[in-house]
Length: 467
Ligand code: TRP
Image (cartoon, rainbow, N blue to C red; front, top):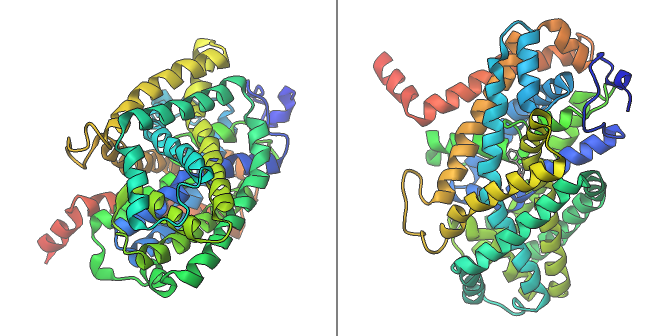
């Protein structure tokens, strides 16, 4: 852990280095795979009509998400600091001014907003571990699972309690800095999760409306696509990959110099996509077989999954194990959501990691009550896009993350000198580099801007004006 390890002559990071390329892949996979894949992907796909949304989402993941993930890692490793300081430093270094640190600040803020509702959903997952163990779902039908979900979500005390438990665990892990240990556990967790999803897939295929589910998920009905659908797909791509807020940048700061960024980013993106698609394939056949509503929203998986666990052989064991694994996946994502803020606080104010995580955790915990109440006391209080939680979700996924990602790719593609970029990417200047550069300079930023304009209806307006 010497200075020279940074390779580019920078001081080593305050927080050390990943011990290997694999450790970094595990950490970023731990961040990426989480509620976004298992909870959010199915419900957002359901709300947006399935097939066409899923295809646009896949396109966003590979054409926009992947190059942005590489750019974000690259910036983190070159800056070797927290996202705020890295962006300030690189902005100065490339002669573009330190105002680029707004990318870092907006990321810190987005992390607060996201974790505040993420923790509420993760709390329900913890609650469902208990429910599964106690056999609450055995033999359950649609009415019973809806009752169980309503009992937890409808009670602000229960939801707040589990939210508190989840935030406490997250803060303890971040404060003690034991993430590295958790990330090792990802080697077990992701395969185990995929294993259980495959078991569930078998169950869905045998007993659910499998064909209907597959068609819903992959058969595009382009008439259902509007500007907002495309924006939702883009937002989901950013959310599920953990990009656009400095999370990957913070982790990139601890990446050894010789590790290949394109290879690691590709591995992470593929693992993340596999988990999301598998979840969708598991959920929708059950939804259709049991007359659940694909548009059910945030409660979708909490109703659909217990139905299969409740009616399959060994369901208590599988159900318990599944919710434990999802809870764990949520935890490895939650710690990454706190990392930019904690690293920034520690580096800029000289606080200890423990102090920084407790302070930041308290703020996020308090903010989380707005999302807790969104399902009970304030369920009918809606504005802009719905409840408080709906608005936090929309503001972060659909606006803050794509904007952050846009600035990241524009900085990497247009404002960084070619020398700095090739130095970090370390793949020479051949085909791979030229592809990355093309995606980063043109495709990713133009696509993000296009999706924004399309969502607010300006493209329709322009084409009408031109006609
Ligand atoms: N990607 C995680 C998930 O799918 C959530 C997450 C972690 C995240 N860090 C992030 C989302 C940063 C956006 C930005 O569950």
